[in-house]
Length: 348
Image (cartoon, rainbow, N blue to C red; front, top):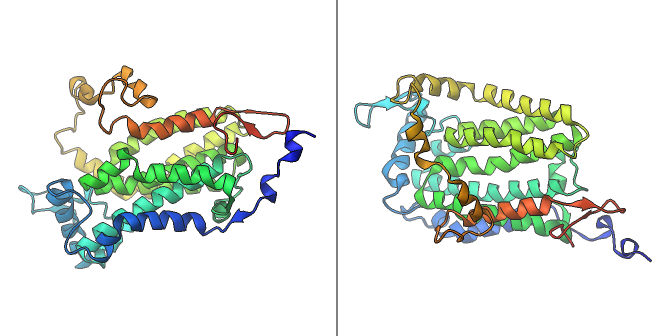
């Protein structure tokens, strides 16, 4: 008898309830932030003297305070001689989760916003990794609720990826520094990746809507630089996923639809930002010498697999390890049974 016949199918294995993954991510989030949410005592989740205390707290208090009084703050007169407020992106007035600042005390709103987005990092990454398995094709985005239900074999990779993304240094150091726009933007990236994966598998245009919604949230979260990086990487990721896709034309058209719809959904913020940029010191672009100041040396690609290969790199290399494992795990072949096989394939 073959090994395939002896092994139970995934469908025959007992399945965890669909609330289990969100519950685990929620408990981990509470374990990290419970004291700051229940008994903040005027404290916020960040280190004293960082950007949250020096800028973001006062900025959010001003902007959403003005909104609560019925004024839309295009200009902030409280810093220097004033500066374009809404057009600066970082106030993120149109980002829906930030609307809690209209009704909650500033300290609680900041802490709750950070905790919420750490929780979303886990949930969305779990869904993305679950969607990567061969038996997890989602015909419609509303099928996502069924992806939370999984066997133990399916559950473990998603859980590991979600926890790694929630607490990896590359993300969590922004929590330490109180970089609210970064923290609010990062959870939506797995949703864009999930949408691209499902477009290559199903070609359903509804995944373009899901991806556009997530991409618009990234724009509205207030850090356009990271949106730019995402725009550079997503076509490359799509090309990689197109290798085994039978729906290449639909997938390419779906990615184009994601970009167009996301720009439309966030047009008000983008238009104001473009107008503000015309009056900034960078209106003519930056010089090559300035742009290469923080370039990534090619030899540092070694840190993708060996974080300390070039000496002590602090937190710069370690967050890339889950990405390296993700690339290795996705390199697989299929046997006669059609089941993925490889060194890091789930359940092998």
